[in-house]
Length: 292
Image 1: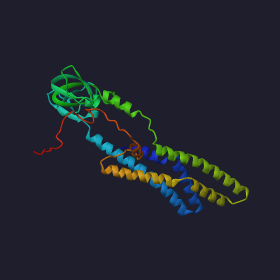
Image 2 (image 1 turned 90 degrees about the vertical axis):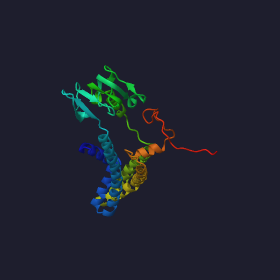
Image 3 (image 1 turned 45 degrees about the vertical axis):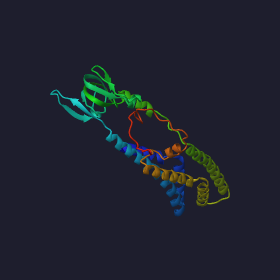
Image 4 (image 1 turned 180 degrees about the vertical axis):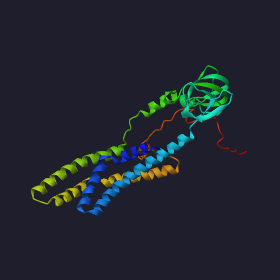
């Protein structure tokens, strides 16, 4: 994970209206000498923010490990008939590659020589039946070789491949908030307006009555603390974090805590057909003997 990705995660979790408002009130409390209240307020929102940051970092690191494990190795054909293994991200258009049985094809290209090559394109089409690829045919990135071998010319790499274009479309989505987060944000939004109005009213009344600035600040800060529900954020985060731990025990890693609520609201889960999550291969589950 790069430092830029880390900063993006921290910024998303820290730069939020309620976080800024609570830290502002905590700073005023520190200035007034109310150290215990300031520590409590800042501690609650800090724990909540750390939960969110840690969960996103864990998910990001896990995904990065999976990407490293799944990186296909390309074999560049050499003039002497041998080949050199290189990472797939070093490929360029025009290179000549050797592909063998068991390989994941790292780029789109045309077959120059085929020796009984058969390819599984289920990752792109959902169909798991092997497809013969004679010389002159086209192979696509992210498909796998299940039989034979071949020599191919690279025609497209990275995001220019068919798989890369599909991935780009899938990533172009607008994240939506879950009903629970919508409700919490609405409550905080309206209560913030109430807090601002209340603070303004109290400040105006106290100022007109001749109270000192320190007394006014202390009073309006107490009013803000009373109205803004910082405990609501912590309670919801702790509950979702507990759910995340339960899922982790089942080898499931949510990228965001809010995804747990989204899964809990599912009534029907639709999956793709044979070839992506399942295959047509029959395996023996158990043997049951019948009585005479």
